[in-house]
Amino acid sequence: FEEKVQIYKKLYTTLNQMDGIDKLMQPEIDPMHALGVMGYSLFTTVIAETASYFLIYRKDEYQNLKKNIENVQKKLDKEKDAPVSSTNIKSHEKKKNQLENQQKYYNQQMSAFRMKSTFLIGIFMIIMLS
Image 1 (cartoon, rainbow, N blue to C red):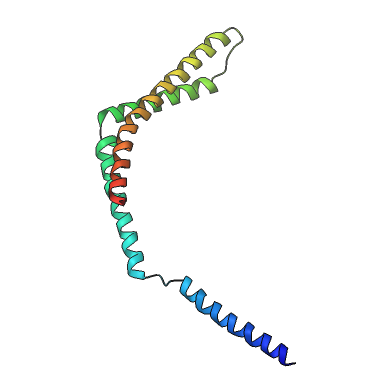
Image 2: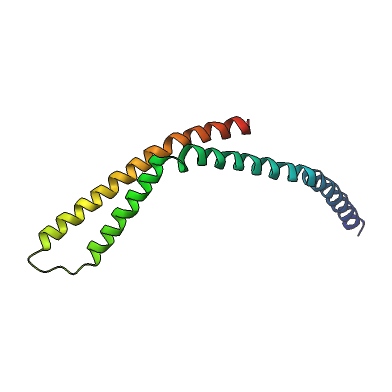
């Protein structure tokens, strides 16, 4: 019986020691620090979006590309929905392919235009986070 009591005492002291270790491994979260991190991330996001606006969205080139993409998409949708007679299948397919190629070209132009500013914003974020 005494052996069992000693085993239980050892187990009890071991568990108490583990509880102390668990408390040390779970640090408290400081609410002010968490608010500071959220404020900092909000600040950098606002700066990045403002830079995107000035570097991308307000430029005439972006507006023209956006308008061209929308127009080509509308034409492509009309071509896909238009009824086709058996005699006009080849010309219809040719026109549809031309519109798809045009859309692909405009999307590539848009990606290239955005890539420049995305690169600059990425550098800004790296600087702000370091």
